Image (cartoon, rainbow, N blue to C red; front, side):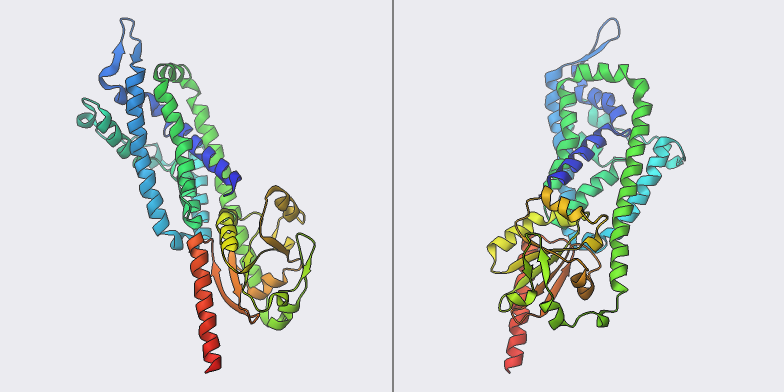
Amino acid sequence: MDYKLVGAIFLEGVLSFLSPCVLPLIPLYLSYLAGDSRHTDEEGNVTYDSKQVFLRTLFFVGGISCTFAILGFASHKLSNLLTAYREIIAIIGGTLLIIFGLHEIGIINIEILSREWKIRFDSLLQGMNHFKAFLFGFLFSFGWSPCIGPMLANALLLASVSNDPVYILIYAIGMLLPFLLTGLFSNKAIRFLSEKKKYMKYVTVIAGIIMLLSGGYMIHDASRTIIAGKTLNGQDVTDTQEESDIMDHFFKTASGKEIALSDYKGQYVFLNFSTTWCTYCQAEIPELEEFAENNEIQCFYVMSPQMEYHQDDIEKYLEENDLKIEVIIDEEAALFYYCGVNSYPTSFIISPDNEFLTYANGALSLDGFNQFFDYSKSLYEEQAEGTTD
């Protein structure tokens, strides 16, 4: 697991709570959850039974968490689709994020986003109890505005391509922890929000700026992947080395060794093409390293300075990450060109006969790596039997 990604996802959860779609409504939610524990003194000051509000907030958060669990399950089922079209999804999502950001800042006005939508909860909220608080949280979570959606979508996308629901859990903690703290200190929270109400417009602007930056990054990241793919696809593969030549080509590894793929004839070789800026590549690292440890296969990461922003990006990346698999530094991108890699990560398996056997696009889970390897072995055995016959 990449801890930078975990930190970013947690921050997105916190920002979702602080977004103008949620934070201004906190007094209203607390008022609903307080129910009959809400008291008004002679001077009009409103106070709540903090213990009662906190308990109901726990159930309220439980209802929201139930929605996260459903979304996490759905993202797992849609993982293949999301992985296959992740660049397109990222560009569309980034564009929407920029549009919503411009709307939040006030540069453009989208009437439908400015319209107030009210759902009548009167019958549900009368006689508030723990079960109703849970149901309220569950229903509330389905009414989120699009300014939360893109950040949640990022967590869902990472969870799906890495097949690791922890990203959903981290996002949920980032968003729901402030809810619990607000419920625990309900009276102080209400007083603080009331006093700082005039500053809410600045929160809106800050949220809009963050959305603009996030949208721009999503588009930039996805566009770089697509452009890199077009560059590689534009190469005439017939003008590059023959398979025997690429196998005998010498490459330097990150540890300073000089190797050729032909050195590993007689065993299966796994090549994982990745870049330092590919978040999906980072997400699958723990799964790939566990796969390599548990199987008799020689694994390599393949990285090239030609695919990076700066020539020293790989060196910095290796210093910051304790990779347990050897890294091939493909200086001229010879392997990238030969294999026609057009998305990241992409994995290839080389047979014991020293021939490229199969490949898979996109991040894989541990089960995915094992299934990929099992399929490759069965394919090689079928080919060997065909040759014998």
